[in-house]
Image 1 (cartoon, rainbow, N blue to C red):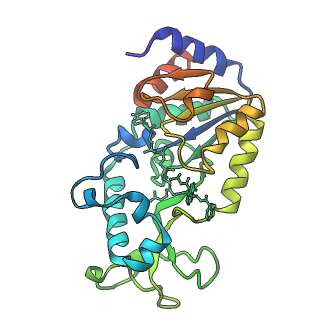
Image 2 (tube, helix red, strand yellow; image 1 turned 180 degrees about the vertical axis):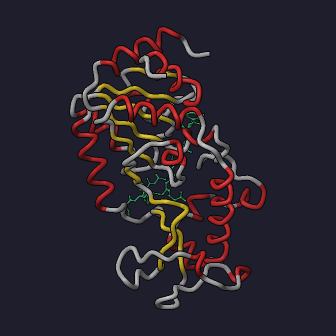
Length: 255
Ligand code: BV8
């Protein structure tokens, strides 16, 4: 049970905010049953390290293994529902029209909970594209319109025949220019940044709180476990986001 005094302090800080920004990581989807990146991967995937699967090299060497791992994760996201933490962030977006939500997550739970204008740093697991960007980056491919031997792994691109891949940012790949620029601009303008459910390990996403802090923002972290962000946070709510965020929204009077 989170200390009511911490919720009150967070309420005081947010109440005065003109330009709040939220940065979320895998932790915000954990209570929806979407495993975080550092969770031990279940079953079939236990023997692989996500850092070795979410890379262009892995896809080049083992396209079926990587494609099947994403198909497995996509199914988990499809079955997942937004949790109270996602809904609370959507409510914050209604209460603070200037609020910007930046996510590292590739699931669509923020959008399904009603958040709008989500800045997606690492793409979307539900989307696919040509791995050769044969018609420009990205060349979107709707695989629901394709018929192929799924046992063989990824479908061939309907335009050039090279393998289709998930439209996510892999380790070693640049983030989409528009997304990273929007995230930096929002972090530079922020007067309060709420950092929810991230270990703060992956860059450049983990730089956003640093940019906000340097620009004078107050940092509030929501995470049951200390992270790389905690040392620079002005206030740490040591609780699951599904518990802390609804309490915060309720305290703000916008249940
Ligand atoms: C780049 C999409 C320039 C894919 C993801 C050395 C060698 C090579 C590269 C590097 C290097 N050192 C650093 C780098 C850069 C690298 C990087 O950061 N590596 C890390 C591992 C050190 N970054 C990149 O490569 C980026 N690109 O830098 O381009 C460049 C170009 C060429 C060469 C060099 C540099 C691209 C990074 C994007 C990778 N793609 N996702 C996919 O999903 O399949 S990142 C992926 O991991 C997620 O999207 C997410 O961003 C990240 C996991 O982080 P978190 O979200 O924080 O999740 P995590 O599991 O870590 O933590 C969960 C937290 O939630 C925990 O703190 C936990 O306590 C908390 N929690 C749990 N339950 C709850 C909770 N919180 C609240 N409530 C709960 N209930």
